[in-house]
Amino acid sequence: MKIYKFQDYKEVSKKASSIIIDAIKENSHLRLGLATGDSPKLTYKYLIDAYLRKEISFKNITTFNLDEYIGVSPNHPQSYHYFMYEHLFNYIDILKENINLPKNSKDNIKEEIEEYDLNILQNQVDLQILGIGQNGHIGFNEPGSSFDNKTFVVDLDEQTRIDNSRFFDSIDDVPTQAITLGIKNIMRSKKIILIATGHSKAEAVHKMIYGKITEQLPASILQLHPDVTIILDKEAAKFLPSNYDYFLI
Image (cartoon, rainbow, N blue to C red; front, side, top):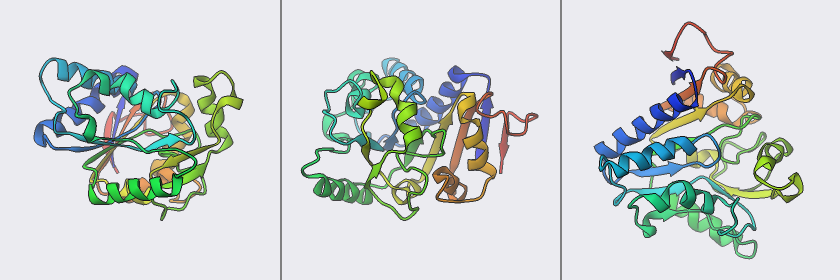
């Protein structure tokens, strides 16, 4: 693992975006795995800025999103489909046919899972962006999820629903299920960037890096990936060695 520590969220996002920008410059047909939530928002803003400066183009980039709530309309403001268009896709030159988001209708979910899983299998992600939950989840792989899972439907952990309730009117409005790429899918990515900020993530970050590899902390599996970059602010890194801004383990 490569681990970077920065002062704040802005610096974290600059570093994450610079890695993605360099990857796009190196491979104009990059297959990019995308995450949602607060962690990557500013990173996406910096990617948009780079596009507007004509530094990069997304015309030949193919994207794959990690997850989506079950039964939430793509037009719902809290759907991850809506999030991606609102925070990235609407402002860049990506082709619509190159955008891959999990479908989430309750009636055909089995077929949709199989279709998305096959798509991921046939198109190995070059660079996957991740966040991490307070309980150590990545994507929506909650504590106890099998490391052998591919794309699947997950019952959302109560802590995850509490964490995400800030985006809804109340916790009762937060969906109880989601479709997510499994750990097996995520680990097939050639390179992974994980962004974490804030003191609430510090314990999970420490366990991810130094703890036992266990399905009870899904992010711990990243210890076994050959190319992972962890980008943290000082609060998320507060349980890590304090005398280094960058180190390898």
